[in-house]
Image (cartoon, rainbow, N blue to C red; front, side):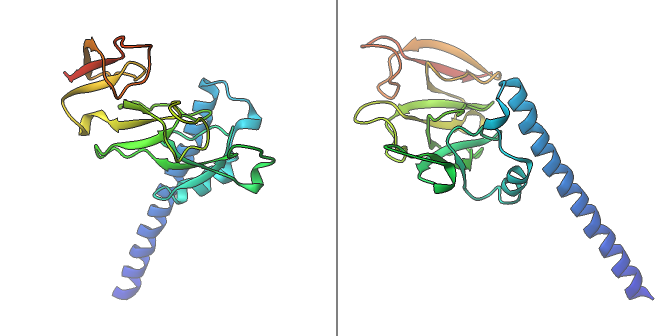
Length: 195
């Protein structure tokens, strides 16, 4: 009898875990639709709920989407590629490889592709030519180096095209060789300090 009670209790816990996971998954899908509405994304540029569900199930891994599809919250473009499921392509890649933006304070390189954005709490610390992004050439800027500010440093330099987290104060405006925004030797960066 005791074994039966333990089995019932265990199955109840398992069912609760499943319900919790599906609620989290639904919240992920709902957030995608909300973001798409805020950014006024047309339906033909949105991922299906089935694709979002698949992405949620394998969040720790990288995912491929077609160029032009709206990117789910928290994901960044880390590389471009050719995917024959994404229609025709000519001289540049037609798909993006996405990864979750790390919040551990490590820096990461991104591609500045269609629908890419910088998320709350993240900052741009360099504008770069990223060889993993198959667009642009030579010294052109086709990506950025980003980091989650709170886990990085209490005071550091960000590029002028970077958002400033709400818990940081923007300080002096100066020139940084890492930031390729602006023209000539003009000021193109800010020092930000955590409040």
